[in-house]
Image (cartoon, rainbow, N blue to C red):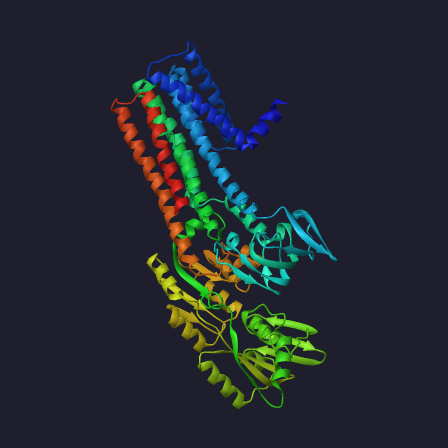
Length: 624
């Protein structure tokens, strides 16, 4: 029975914090009364001894558990210090040690609770109940009972409980919970909407496509939870340092006692150099950085990513959707022979209807906006990423994509048609050529725009230490050069398929400098995996993007790149500063001890006071 309560206490952060708060308050009262030499009750010393003995149990328990796991922790050093304090009758010093350790445990709980708070912050935006339309009736049901395919009614002022597609209605949706941007977006029939976002005005009927743990919100919560458990090399170094530090401290203290036979001196040394502030402030700093990024719609997968982002020197980036809007528009349609424009668009729409490429979506939108044309699904569909599409309808074969892809599929392209295609490409535009039963029947001309402010954003990353930007694209050389010149790339590669992009990233394998890649997380997943740091742009609608990259940018905005770089650099600077603070305060404390200015009581008070400096320093990250 007793063991069950112990386990329950260990799992309950609230109870542990309450225990330490009560201990701190009672110890503080007794120590203050002793300082002023006023003893309002007879058994105050016995009460101090009782508090010290109560406070020592969590320390001994933690140190013993760590030893069973073959780890040396700061609690072991603290337990030794407490043992010597009790042995020498230094109850006031022991009181200060307990006071210091209780505060350290509270801050440690804050470190653990911080990631939970991020999750709870996100969870509060998921409604517990939702209105579902079944037949002609509307029922209000718990969130957990919503199923894929249900029609969910979302009125003004309500948050969405699911990811889905708008079936009818129109509303202004605020996506700040996922993207960090409060600018509202109008959603209408056919648009995607996501869980936790807020309907500011209007009414929607949404068909549920993802529910429960499969929604974008749940994916973010899962990744945030995992991120809080990962460690950067700085944290790992701190852990290793702690083990060596404890051994060196204990051996050094034993040597000093062997020479001086002064137990009070040894105790004062142990009290000054107890490194509980570092043990708490380093992980707290990284957790604060991850939390701050999450509030901006930047999902960072662990503290090791924070550390890597601060070192980025080279960026490789995809063009479409990263540097450009990713929403190309068809500016011109050209047909060859006797085929009509309507017939050409019907065949082009059939070829592109299942494509996930931005050009394919642009084609489908263009065709669907033409009320006279209805897109028919093909019988067979095969997409060659970065090259083109082959579909069959009955015995008819339709090929759509780059001119060289058509030629590879034995589609005839006349000299006149080649000349026209070359002329269009030289005018810095993209084309989709279409072949029908081995003859070229026409082409669609597309244009995409560079995102406003892209060049300034890239220049900002250079100011943060980036030396080189490289652009990869499947477009032709003229389009690639135009975008590259406009945004200020150092290098660009064109006419690439996903394998080509992968090979270019591989060519940097022997680099010494940190390489980052920006992509969509879908077509670029393999290349992203090879980079030291990978960014997925506009990941709000893509599970693959969220899972593939080290950092998922929920908002399709390049300015998040310098933002996370600044935050990462500030986090690393803060963590390193904590080590300097700890070193300096330890040095000062030891000088005071060896100079005879601090005894055990003064050493414990000194350590208690200086412990707060690195911890408060880490909390500055939350305000960055």
